[in-house]
Image (cartoon, rainbow, N blue to C red; front, side, top):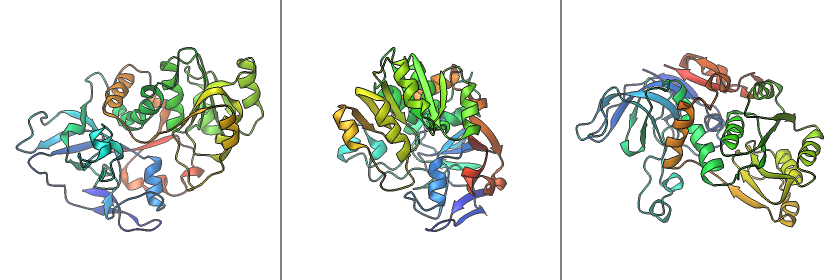
Length: 343
């Protein structure tokens, strides 16, 4: 089968290779991949900006069907439609694992960067406790959004950062930003403003009913609009899904005193300018977030099943694995919101 492999350390070194269908152990399953989403993390690995253990098949966002089971697998059968949490090989013994946080265990080696992932027709899944069933009423291709959506649900909904009636500003018009805006609305926000700079993505966001306003981050209208809307108080919640120093600075100006500031987006840099004094003087609550929790997956599947997440608006590119270079080379120059490989 064809697989997209990061062959060695360094920028680039991504190749489409012929590899064998993986063999499974007694407690493992083989998954026939239906769709695999291209994440910003995959681009970071391509650019040598994220930890990984080559050679490794990329891809950690997927939906698929179980094609084979090991002899000791009791809870899953051939034909089951699944998505899976990428927290494989967490040790189960460290402080983080024992307090229910295997998603940030130092021993964790997720599919797509620590072990072989979903950018191939078949993938081995070593820990069946991390699988979730896709509801029968949900199209399997739509379930590919479950992993990025689970991140958003963990960061926006399960952290209880939003109270009914809040004004919420989200920075970043990528898939995470748009889904964060939608989840904020579902969590009870009365007014959701999305800010960004990419006109193609902003145009998509303007057609979503969950989002009240879409504004350019380069415009003075952002802070002015928030202050007019809140009688000068400021936004209750600011969610950064961009990793941009400019967005953090704007957020510091528009967040209210004792508001909540949550960071989801990865930065391209190890350090960024940060408006420390501004946020401290406002007594802002600040959350950093990474990865997902078990509960967020079932909640994400429920949101997808209920039609709250606009799959057709978010997934703007369906590609075959042979077309991988069209995704990974110069991704920011392309007019696309979310690309997925379809097998």
